[in-house]
Image 1 (cartoon, rainbow, N blue to C red):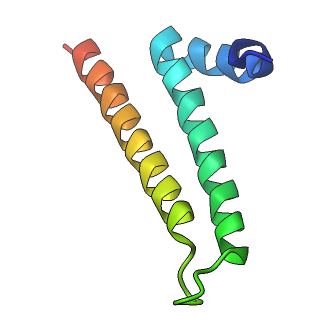
Image 2 (image 1 turned 180 degrees about the vertical axis):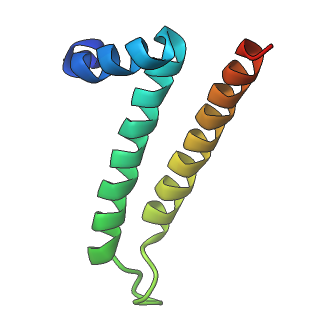
Image 3 (image 1 turned 90 degrees about the vertical axis):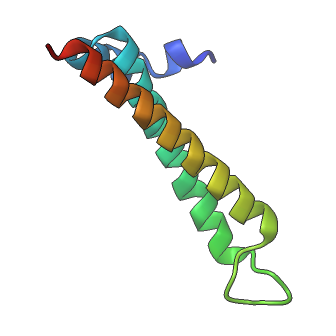
Length: 86
């Protein structure tokens, strides 16, 4: 199911509050946050054989990449907000 259909209610809510672009970015941040939570839960059970206290490498890479994506999206949202202020 396309994202616009699956998350229609969330998109309508945030687009009404923030405008279409920032609203879509806000929903995207929520989806990335959900992905981080799921990866984090998975990381609890998948540990490295070398170091039992550390998640396996792929979990660490996925977590880092999603975190970077969130950071970039947040910077875009802040830039849009700054452009709107006089």
